[in-house]
Image 1: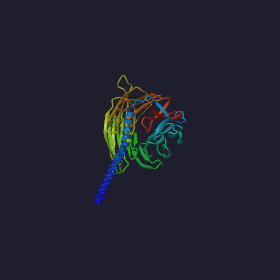
Image 2: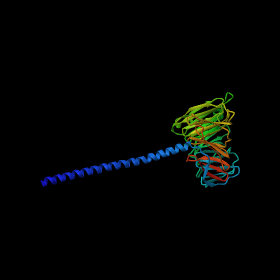
Image 3: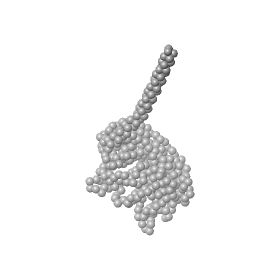
Image 4: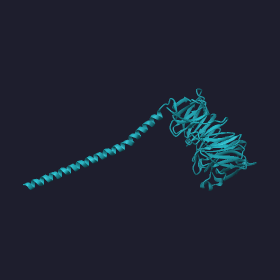
Length: 401
């Protein structure tokens, strides 16, 4: 009997031990699941909070701004300021220099030029004099080289790589030559005005592989324009004179043509706005007939904004905004006398020396206010609703609140 009892007691203990192990395993699995849920919930919660903050921030109406940083600078009388990457390029007839957002001068170039031609692309710039023979090429951080030409320069355009295309005038022809920053000529093209017309606008793509030119010519006594696209890559090598697209526009002058990015370009005529797709070859994307007076044109890699005289009595100006495919995405009537207009991802801003106004693409006002200083240039930053304002004595970083 004693042996039977000991056997049953052992069996009972083994069962209890097995039950305890099962309970421990279940408890471990339960804690593991809870830990997994907590770990997975944290990024979801943080993501939801971030999305909520972005939605709130994008819908928030701002009532003022705080100056979060100030860098001192000196302004030269008669000088002009332009954005160059995340820096400010200042130029006058006596020279040019570039200052970063900490107020540090990254380069300084002296020259004497009465009629300056300036071209910029992202953080690259090229400077020359109209009818001059020398082109200065520089990025925001350093000087890259000088280009010498044998013929007078009429126009220039620069790529983000530093490659420069110059329109040069000969006695009975025009040359459109492309150079590397060190002055090495990589492409040369001669155009006889009787056959091709006079090149009145030129633009090179950011990569430096595409060139767009607007020619002006007489067509049976009437002024017309011819837009041509040239590909410097392998596709262009298989085409006559690298020409990969062209279009004639009768009874129209096209004084502006620009690349927005490597695959999108637009041109502005006196009565038409045209968008082009530029991949291996160039083709028309969209066209708009313009029946109002154009006051100004502004563009970014994503948007083109055309300012017209308003057709309404209660507003002085009208701004039409298009995306890179040529679709009209916004229209805004306004009265502000503007010094500049720039575009961000979902908003655009217009400003003058004393005030600015910021709107989203639906036309809703996000901010309207006055500056504490006289502003010569306003720039976007990578942070939403944070901007830099350039004055005669400083570069201030401001955050809307």
